[in-house]
Length: 440
Picture 1 (cartoon, rainbow, N blue to C red):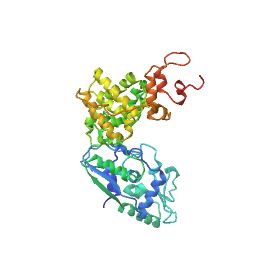
Picture 2: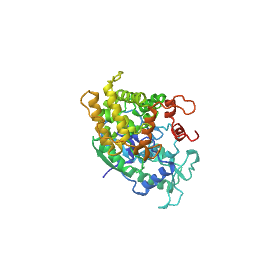
Picture 3: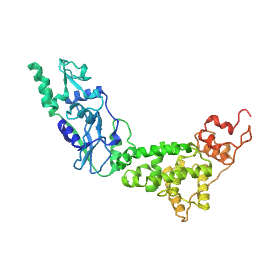
């Protein structure tokens, strides 16, 4: 297995040869864990190998490592991106580097060796404390080990025995080698799988984090665009679409790859995702407008199944500022498909495969080619209404509510038509008195 010295790690980070990808943001150890890491390195305990992904890809990366702003550099390719070991490499860099000035308060980077503590394999001789609390009669700052002038100043007042002890500790850290495993591949899907399997933090790497890194440019940040889309949809009651990143990614995958799985995007070209974002946005807006106008869906939670939005997004996706003009035949075909899918709970079994079949047919309908969208067996009897339990989160219940909503319901009290946009946006158990009044 390959290895790097602490000095090499520091130099590679400063030169930009080792980088922390953006999807690793925020994973930082506390002071105690950093001190324990230093103790483990000092005692020669295994600390686990760093996993680096060597690639010629240009990813969005963190320009700040811990409390330190990294210099702007143009490194030689390939670059090693940290897939596993971000906390360890950040801790090592923060504790030992001497060239950069901290831009944030980070007590964890000030780790001291307590040379008056009794050596003990169980107990640590390393502490992370604020500089003003350090006792120079017993605490030696680890950063001095990699600063020749600083080390000379720090040891000048020590007695010979203590200075000799510091020489030995310095030698341990200068000679220590950190094990490194390298993953060399240009297959992004492999990278996603490897990260998920070795992730000891139990924090899943999701597709949106990877795509944000792979599609990022100075003018485009995918997560920010999703947030903006959510804000844009809020006045229409569909802000949850923008917040449901999994659903959004499936809509993206459907338009770009005709797949209903977000993982289909992992190997997709980042520039294409950026250039077609507005096309997909148009598809989502068009789908929402169709649902509001034709089937009284006024919020995402009104949809019997959120996946219904995916084929509709494909149908209404158009480039530029234009809108898709539908024929009455297309509208009636989509409505037939919608109601049949809802009443049969068609997406319950093999949802991905079933949605992809509908995507294929909706594309044919969009092109005005012969389409079998909605052409599947449907049998709805009285038992649909008498045997299904009335539960707010069931497909049958939401389908039933939408069916009633499309028959212009009236208030039992005033006789006025119920304002569906207000009721259905906020419906909960308290709103069902419109359907089953308890005190009428």
